[in-house]
Every structure is written in C-alpha cells, then in structure tokens.
Image (cartoon, rainbow, N blue to C red):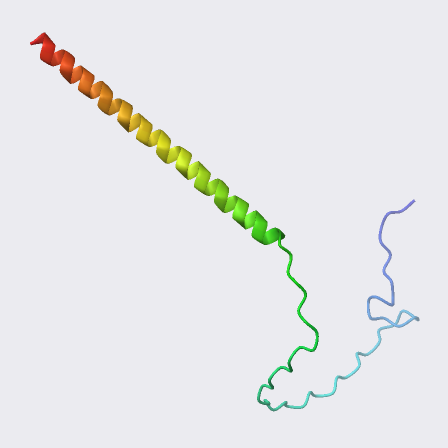
Length: 98
C-alpha cells in the first residue's frame, strides 16, 4: 500500500484531461469613490442583557487581591511590632547589665 499523496487535477488548476488550463482573466476593478459615513439607524429591538460572569469573576479576583494584600500588610506590621518589642527588651537588658 502506498501512502504517497496523489495529485488531484481539480485542486491543482488542471482540467480533467491533465493538461494545463489557462487562468481566467480577471476584469479590472472600478475605482470606488469614498462616500460619507451614514449614521446607524436606531435599534428597533432592545439590547439583550450581557452576561454577568465576567463581572463576577473580575469582582472575585479583586476581592482576593484585596484580601491577600491585607494579610500581607498585617503580617509585615506584626513582624515590625515584634522586632520593636525585642529591641526594647534588649535595650532594657543591656541597661540592667551596666
């Protein structure tokens, strides 16, 4: 069995006899003048309501971003507070040692 694709005369531009067919001449296109844009007519039917999925997904993404930011900022604030407490305790210990 051969898996080589055989050429098809109707897809290669050849006529059914296998001889080359002359291409059909294309008529020249007339020059089109630019016309002023027309205003669109008013809609006769009301516009269908849009899907609320994109809005809901965007709102949930923003809510998640705000929550992650709040947790991150509160964690940083907690670390800064603990560092200040440890520094104050270390300063008190060094004062007592003098």
